[in-house]
Image (tube, rainbow, N blue to C red):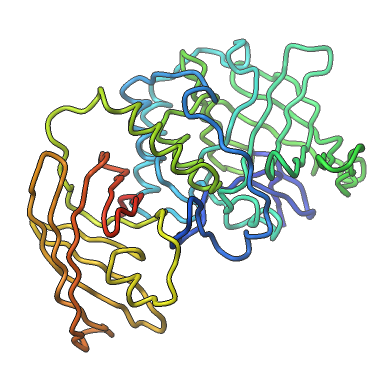
Amino acid sequence: MAIEIANLGFQLNPLPTFSPVFVPRTVLKSSNRCRFDRRNLLLLRPPASSLVDEQPQVSFTEPENRLIDSLVGLQGRGRSASPQQLSDVESAVQALEGLGGVPDPTSSSLIEGRWQLMFTTRPGTASPIQRTFVGVDNFSVFQEVYLRTDDPRVSNIVRFSEAIGELKVEAAASIKDGKRILFRFDRAAFSFKFLPFKVPYPVPFRLLGDEAKGWLDTTYLSQSGNLRISRGNKGTTFVLQKNTEPRQRFLSVISKGTGVMEAINEFISLNQNKATGEPQLLEGEWQMIWSSQQETDSWLENAANGLMGTQIVKGEQLKFVVDILLGFRFSMIGTFVKTGATTYEVTMNDAAIVAGPVGLPMEMESKFNLELLYTDDKIRLTRGFRNITFVHLRVG
């Protein structure tokens, strides 16, 4: 059984591997922090980082922006993507590969450096270790490429957090041609912040023979050196970036759960001068991924006030939908009226517990003002019930 190390095109048989992640499936409420799947609660949170200072501002061409847009909000680096989302990414990838990018990328200095993995195909087919790392957005996954040294290397890195440390798997590398890098794994170790020494990763590379070998083709390298598409010897596609754009960095802060309100204020400030005309509540299905409200004891109150689940906007109608269990859902429908350039008055008054085509009506009513702080076709920031700040991602 083939197993990919870091899901970055490096594969071994039959030993465990690992890969990247971005994001827990459902975020309920929290006080300045995200709530992720309980399996991730043991992870220490990294310190907050500035959207401005963390990386330089970067620009992308129109075809590159198409790919970036398809990646924004994609959970688990593709692991939780819908068929439509995967199709959008693949279409954008193929368009860029058709353009070619930098010729002979392995000969270019632009390929050198640390690349962050943003997307990979087939992440669910790997070992349990890989599945854990790939689907968890709390971890950051990188690939380092250094070919112009006396010891050329390609390394895959899983960074658990700034407080914990990382796992690094290294391979001796060589250039075969203008696109292909050959590699052979030879060492790996954990580097924990709380230990003064490295802990070896127990993989007997020398005993693996050809199974420790592989290759990685770079099928697109941007002229800016900020975007790379690669395909591995097992047919896996990878999208990597050196510098991510503000929306991607903003969502990364949310996934880590530290300094979210500061990131929200900074993100809004960065986008104030880009606004054209009055923002609108865009139609579609919007999944809540973060709110500044601390969770209450009543899930029903949380659901009725939009603090959980999905919002569906259609015309002047707003609908809250929360999956309960065993096919049961809570649904609440209302209307909204625009009262200012960025404000709305919302009335929710048609509630029910729904199971298939059958609904049990409930007498409930909720009225509140909604302020639209920022919106595009992927991300929406609002301030609503009890002055709570919400972050929603558009799905579907």
